[in-house]
Image (tube, rainbow, N blue to C red; front, side, top):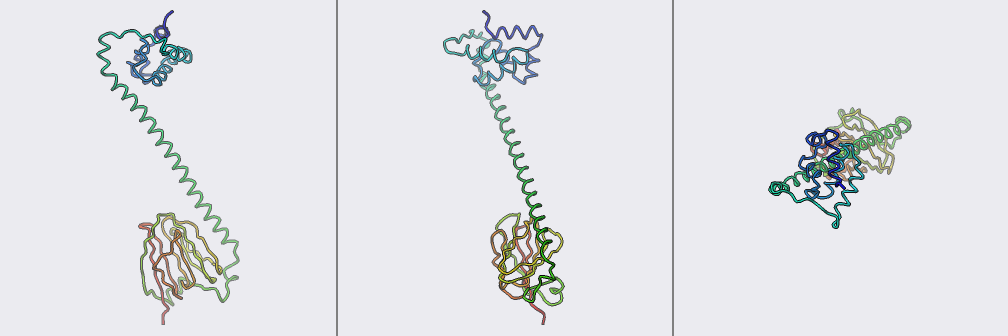
Length: 277
């Protein structure tokens, strides 16, 4: 009874398929295809031989499952029979380790590329989720502002207010300092006030907005990435925190204070004002 690999060779020849054509179609080194047809299954580790044998059999129109079963049967220690290699092939054996290493390197490179693609896909998905979260957060924030009563209606004599016009006409800058922010963007701004105040702010060079902060309220602003400009009526009873930290150079005073946050480098410029006399 003919060995299965000789039957496979006969099947290939009957299909008039050249080994060179098989090597081109399967991307398998032709010396491994020759080894399969000669029953020399020890030129590579068994997992690689099984992989190459399956591709070879499929291309010539054979039964891959049956061929693998016959390979397993032939590879059992009690049934292993391989022809003696001729002398010239023994000499060629010296090149086998490098060929094996080349095949292993190709497999390793393929797995590395696959992992890189998976990491890129995961990173892209996380970035999209993050951007979507910022958009939703800002939309909710704006909707909350729209549902609040009109600023003129809620304003009481005890509300501390400030405006850009009043800064120009009634105050002057007395000090400017810079503080480093120890974290990278996105930035999250939280303002806590022990009395009712109005705050003027703009985020990422957007339009200037005015927001009312009630007594003892912690107000969380939408996250921003590049810049922010916040004008406070005073800092006597106000705490401002950026990514959980309060800039050390903010002095407690009853006059307005401006915070200008920048991402390059992560820092905040603090300007203290005093009234004109």
